[in-house]
Length: 345
Image 1 (spheres, one colour):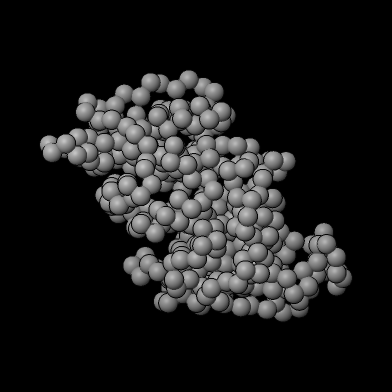
Image 2 (spheres, rainbow, N blue to C red):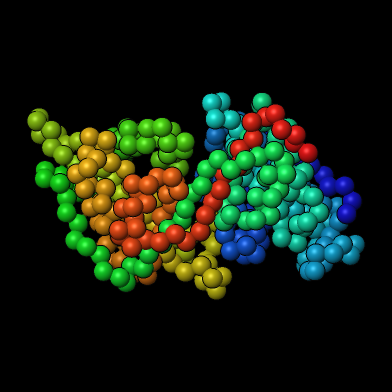
């Protein structure tokens, strides 16, 4: 193929966002897993996390359905079209920059993945980079290791059927549960989330803007956002835990630039245990289990057949809890890290 054209930009134009969305959908359909995380998809839709660097690779060739260069235009052609994309977040000066990358299925095995990663390394402030591989793709792992990366984090997706029996939630004495009230509970929830996830590489750093960005998503529904409270001596209530649920698929799921119904694409409606957090002072009381069950019962009441969640593979207590609730491992995401000393090409 002719030399590809590489651009590194800050803010994406509407046309560039649309091109990335089309690339992401093509990769999702081919691989069965979305190549970019929710965090990146939200950034594409709303902006944020400045400074972020977007790596765009365009092809001057076109490729036939068999992946071979045929020099022609057509529905499968890529003449001067976006064939690879990388999202580089350089905001974490402690852990280093992080990136997520994707190459169009018909443009793979031509060195574009290596070029994409090498460009993100060159754009990182100090050569360090954390690189996510969603779905534990073997090609991604081989590429990462060949470029000086080593595995540093593993995230499991776990699932269970909602048709199976769900135990009755048993709340600790004095705790009551209600749903989230937008505008009223925002600040208190952000404080509790930071307390519950202190030290977590992603969740613990959420600010009010991170909450509000998700509240603007079409899937957001306060009826599925449960808050556990305890009464204070002065009669006020204190947030001590929460379970935020989410629904994927159908009309609740939207792409980067607008509605995208997954019917017919192999993605059925599914509920998610989006975030469960508990005040450290409440740990060991069974509150996390009770909140998880309350959310699962809500998702079942919505008529959903299955539920999913994400958990770090080294979080043994959480995995043990979820296994006791009949969740099993479904798929795996892997983070690879590079210390800045290894070669980038």
